[in-house]
Image (cartoon, rainbow, N blue to C red):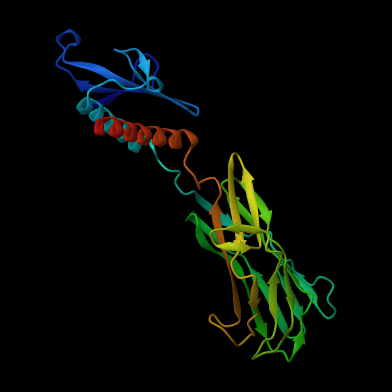
Length: 273
């Protein structure tokens, strides 16, 4: 048995050897056509489609169905995961009007002897779904019990594909921090998106028929003191990315598989009789 493209416009045809001398050494037994959501399986010798029933011998029919299922397996390609490059350039760490805070750069604030700096995250060739690095906040300096409540961290994500950007829900910083200990936290909210990683703060970045969901894995994070942590003084922000366009097979693939399995079940019932 062999599979060949049909020169008359149908995408595939299934051949089997025959003893019919008038047909030569081989004859096309079935033509399989997938057009949109419709599958047609036709026997050109007998001139009918699957919908009108089978009247072939059990052995030949079983060989035919095996060929069709092999074809289905060959063309399936359950949608593969997407691969992305991303970075968080354009993110900001803001004083947000907090008294005693000096905005040094768009990603760095200073409270007396305490400096907080947001460092961007990035990734290349990331296969989705995956846990990713969304950057970190580094605390440095010497300070005693400084209240940093009201600072605001806004993480911007640039994703390729689709070649667009989006902003994650803001991270509100609250609490006090000292040189050797910290009671400060970052709270990202709201939990507005859902994926296999959970219901979490996130943003969908879409374009060109593709969509990727970026989420914050730990909505509540403790801010490390300047002399604490590994690396020292660093609060890492983990995220996750999911390809929303890769979660299911193409409709024609599902139809093809369903047709093949349905035909196999039908023939088995006929063979049992």
